[in-house]
Figure 1 (cartoon, rainbow, N blue to C red):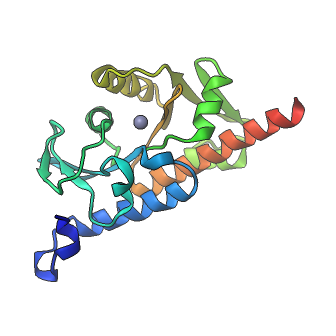
Figure 2: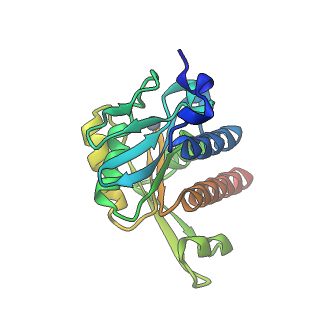
Length: 212
Ligand SMILES: [Zn+2]
């Protein structure tokens, strides 16, 4: 039974508004190709102590209002909506544990990130773009380096590798044949970073295609 559909005003959870935000963002990024087949995930911190995050469920349910899962530090649902937990939950939690100012994590499975990784070594560098100001890069010739790591199906190992890469100071990490993890101090910042990285990767890919 879908609890969210039948919930009355008196029974609304204090997390409902955050759920609505995360659902809107998921739908928006889905339209931009970030969540093919309903894959990928978004989470946000609703409380640091006790630790609570909202995370989108796996599959297309993430695009339905009120279906976010409230998770504790161990990845266990505090309030079950009966939906399947994303297999990426360990990585989301690890990012919040290691990067204290992270409050939103977006994990797109975008085509741009896959193609970029296929055509790159251990990193991709964006240099001289005006939009890099959004990443705190103010110099005209400043550059942004995004690390690229190999994929693994070991969830603990993936969480370790992703956080290790982010702790180098990058706002994002690309995982080969998988996608990307991006974090922000707020949902707006995580969204902005995601959209701009998608834009920069697409620019590079189109530019490369043009010159072949
Ligand atoms: Zn994934």
